[in-house]
Image 1 (cartoon, helix red, strand yellow):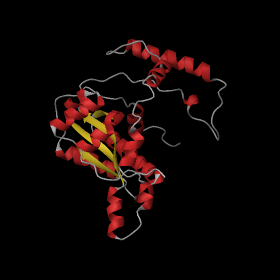
Image 2 (cartoon, rainbow, N blue to C red):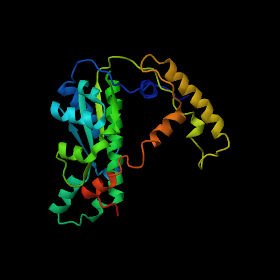
Image 3 (tube, rainbow, N blue to C red):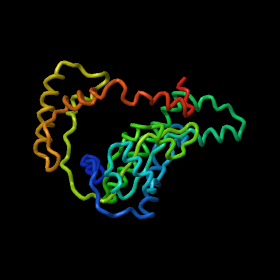
Image 4 (cartoon, rainbow, N blue to C red):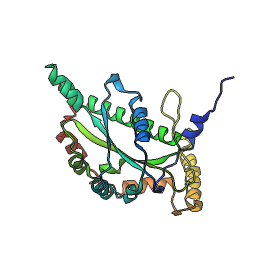
Length: 252
């Protein structure tokens, strides 16, 4: 009988975001290992369409804290910004007098996003295997143009995610995920027949989690969380498409 659990599966199913860190920086060797783990992630057509920026300048970190609204990242042991990147392949195209048209397309933009996201998850899994913890931060997109300026990002690049990593100073409770019946289907998208009942049960579970967790307890359900996200308004990050196009991704 095949083994249905192992150390890696246990680690993956115990993931929790860490935002409170010990005052202990990562070593250069640890950073190198994490970058190596990212480098060996799956990549679309072996095009390796991402770059990684280690941010160590306190002034830049402070500005990223302002952009993201999460100033606690200043206390992390290390901070990465993960960049969707077709600029490197553009340079190769120009060097070989090859038509770079496709690099500007929606298809290649998405491919670079996929590569970046997969490499990001490899870093997080590797970090947790080393006894570290962290948070993947999409909040750097609150001002993507400022991020581009801060990091001097060239044409055909886009800052996608931040990763704050370090030694955990606490161990948050495991946040309950959606029941599998609500997102894992067979052969076609699932029926809405039992949706309301399943959601009500999950809302109760999430409300209990928030009420009883050891820090920052509050009254909230999953439904309330989603509605709150939608209440951010029509203008939230509305400039993203324009900034992406400004970076040379024509999205045609």
